[in-house]
Amino acid sequence: MNDILPLMRRAAGRTTDLVRAIGDDRLGLPTPCTEYDVEALLNHMEWSASLFESVAAGGPFVPPKQEYTGDFPERVERMLAVYERPEAWEGVSEAMGGLPRAVLANMALTDLVAHGWDLSRATGLDWEVEEETAAVLAAFAARMAPKGREQGAFGAEVAVPDDAPALDRFLGLIGRDPAWKP
Image 1 (cartoon, rainbow, N blue to C red):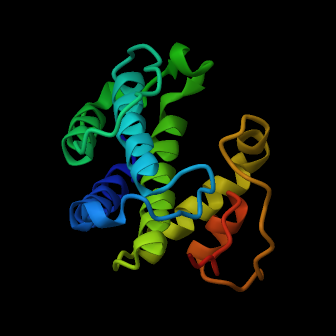
Image 2 (tube, rainbow, N blue to C red; image 1 turned 180 degrees about the vertical axis):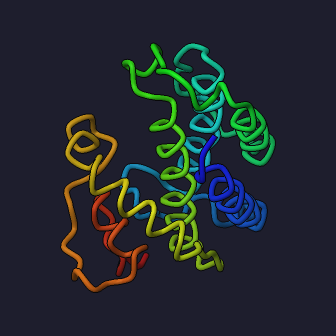
Image 3 (cartoon, one colour; image 1 turned 90 degrees about the vertical axis):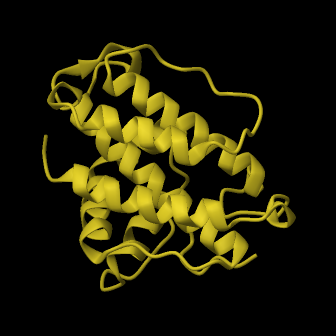
């Protein structure tokens, strides 16, 4: 295990609090993830939590789910429980093209933070990320962005000043405009 797990726990807690605060009246709102409205993004986040739970446990790739079920908090708790095990950080995931499991943990953290930000922007609800987490993600995204874009996980880079806050640099690297508004 490494220093990512405490960051994952805190990001998961903040994002879960945000998800719980989203009322049904906001499910149709647009998000910075242009292919998703709030409901579709929540569905994607539920699937992502299950996917990362599976691959961290050495399991198979989990196909995307079709319907939003409203159980993100439970899914993310199960994902975190798997990451509590040392073996979740060791070796590679055959289900994810041989990527090291530690890289997959960083990808799970990326998902929690990016989509927490997406939901906050879309709904106008408060959400924040610690500077330490944002800095770790900015460094990770700088290394992974070319491959992420190649695989369709990240959008085209959005130019952000070099002296911008770490969260803004992270967002720009993964293709989000930090100034996005609905």
